[in-house]
Image (tube, rainbow, N blue to C red):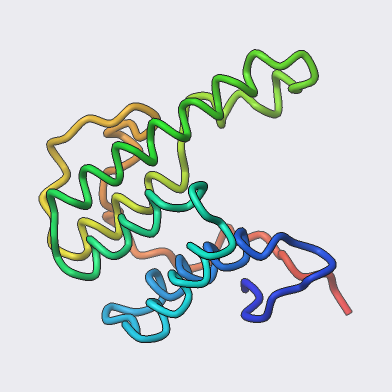
Length: 154
């Protein structure tokens, strides 16, 4: 479970706020618009340009504007590509650990799923780092049989 309170000593505020926005969007079909707007406003204050495309994407999602969602998603994907390619060229980047990030954008897959859940028609569109096979809907309900414990045992 993700924390709902910012751990000032352990994480950047903008990263915490973005995680909270995703939590709100993912956990309910009709997220609280006032609480999300509050989170987005604060994220824009502390994250400035770094999160502008993502904030715009969420606002487009909440307003049901598919074309704006697609535009903001394209911008966020380009930002991901720029950062990924920069890290790929860096001498200190561990090749094996980094390889999955070079070809698959998990956050992007989640954002596309949220868009589809909102009724946007995105299944026919091709996006780099978000391959069609990774976007296939699950046919079998997850029963928790292969879950990994994320909390240390007490």
